[in-house]
Length: 411
Image 1 (spheres, helix red, strand yellow):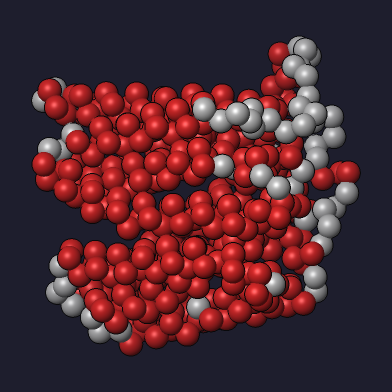
Image 2: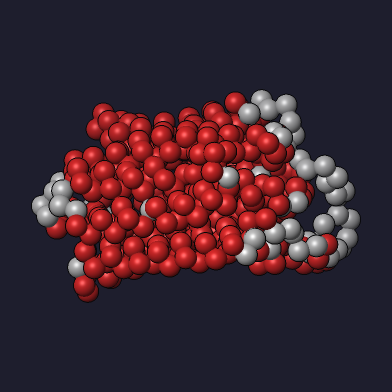
C-alpha cells in the first residue's frame, strides 16, 4: 500500500509543479491566453476521450503494465521538453506534441489505476486507504505550485524535469508492487477475428458507464461528484475573478488556495474517523448541507483572508464525503469493472470541471461575482436536498443491478 501511495503522491506533486509552469512558459514564449486555454482544453478533452479505452486492458489484467507504460511515456515526453528548453532548441511542434502526449498518457495511467485499492487491501481498510491517498493529493496541491514557481524562477526547464522524474518514481513504485493488480478470474486472451475483437473492445469500453447508469449507488456517486466538483471549480474561479477585480495580485490568490489546500489535507486525514463516528449515510448528508453555508458566505467576502477561511471550510468538509463515495464505489463494483467504472465517473466529473470555468466567467460578466457565488450556493443546497432524498431511499446501500450489469459476452 505504501508503494501505491508514493506512486500516487509523486505523480500528483509532479503534475502540480508542471501545471503551474506550463501556462507561464506558453505566455513567456509569446502565446496568447486564448491559445493557452485552447491547449489546456484540447489536451484535457483528448485525455477524457482516451481514458475509457485504457481502462479495458487494465480490467482485463494488464493494470500494472498499463500504469508503468503510461508513466514511462509521460516521463519521456516531459523529459524531452525539459532537454529542449535547457538546450534552447524548443520547436513549437515539439512543445505542443509533448503536452498532448503527456496529458493523454496521464489520463490513461489514471484510468488504469482506478480500483487498484480494492485489489490490494481488504474492504474494511478502504476508508483509511482512500483518505491517505486523498491526503497525498492535497499535500501535492499545497506544495506543488510553490515548488513549481521556485523551480521556474531558477530555470524554466526545471519544473518539467521534476515532473518527468515524478513519473519515473511512480513507474518504479508500481513496478515494485508484489501484487499484479489483476482481478481474480481475468479472462483468457481473445482469439476471435480482428473485427470481432474490436467490436468487443468498443463494447467493453462502455461497460463501466452502463453499470453506473443501472446502479442507484453509482448514479448517486456520479451526480454528487460531478455536481459538487463542478460547483466548487466554479466557486474557485469566481473567487479568483473577485480578487482580481478588487486589485489583488497573484500572492492574494495563492494565499486563498494555500489555506484551502491545507484545510483539504486536514479534512482528508480526519475523514476516516468522521465516517466511523457518524456512519457513511449521515456523513454524506451532513457534508452536503454543511458546505452550503460557507459557500454562500463567500458572496460577502471582502479580502484574501475571508475568502481563504471560507473556502478552507468547504475544503475541510468535502474529503469526508469523497471518502464515503469512493469507498462505496470500491465495494459495489465487480473487480473486473473497477477501472472502467471509475473512469466513467471521473469522465463525468472532468466534463463538469471543464465546463465550470466557462460558466463562472459568463455568469460573472453578466451579473457579477456575488450573485454568481449565491447561485452556486443555491445549486449546492439543491444537491444537498437531492442527496438527502436519495440516501433516505437507500441509494447508498442499494445492491448491484444483477448479472446484466456487465456486458454480455464481453467479459
